[in-house]
View 1: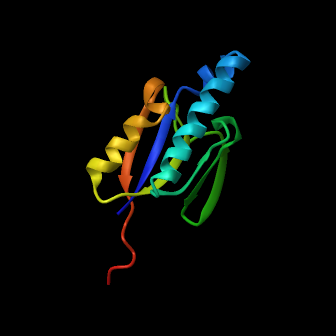
View 2: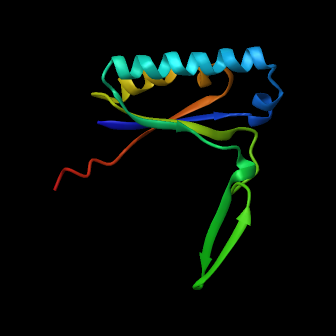
Length: 118
């Protein structure tokens, strides 16, 4: 089954990290990503640009409106994601707990629908 691991954290913290700490955090993510690849469970993933680069789109009564920035003000923002394929939720939670983002923010684990079933 495929699961999306959503990485949430305070993006303001990232912008204030000294270069050495930032490089160390990126190195931790690279190790984690490689562990997912080595285990054969990685299906995709990416870091996201900050919420200042986001645009929210709404359609109401046929009218499209756009707003710069995220949908809602939050203490933690979606900063990236992984898509993994593992046998069950327990394994997905184990991988989420190993993600560097779990140390300073939170991880949301969501199953993806199985579109191969009729």
